[in-house]
Length: 105
Figure 1 (spheres, rainbow, N blue to C red):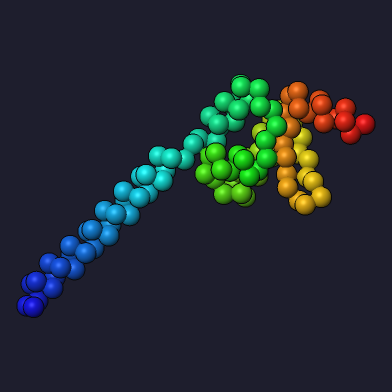
Figure 2 (figure 1 turned 135 degrees about the vertical axis):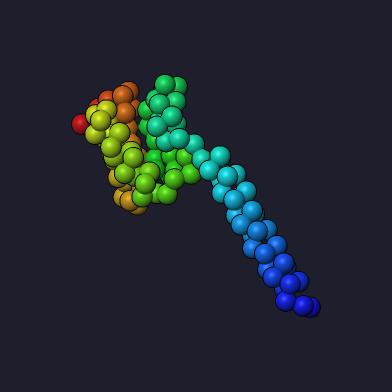
């Protein structure tokens, strides 16, 4: 192989890799759901109880970002976070919050 062929081959490999990465990232981000829209949709349809795992799976956010988002929404809308003995966090808003508070009393 002469040097021109090597350079051409390397450029083709580089652009093929870059294009593959770009396609994958577009596909991944297209499947990610906006957390605000998912939260509004969840509350609108009457599901006023959610776990970090459920919300993270639906929005494709990391657990840490999901927890921060739900903490902010709980503060904003007067929701509460209940952490069970295993350490799983469940967030309650609206009717679910009232029911949880009655059950705890």
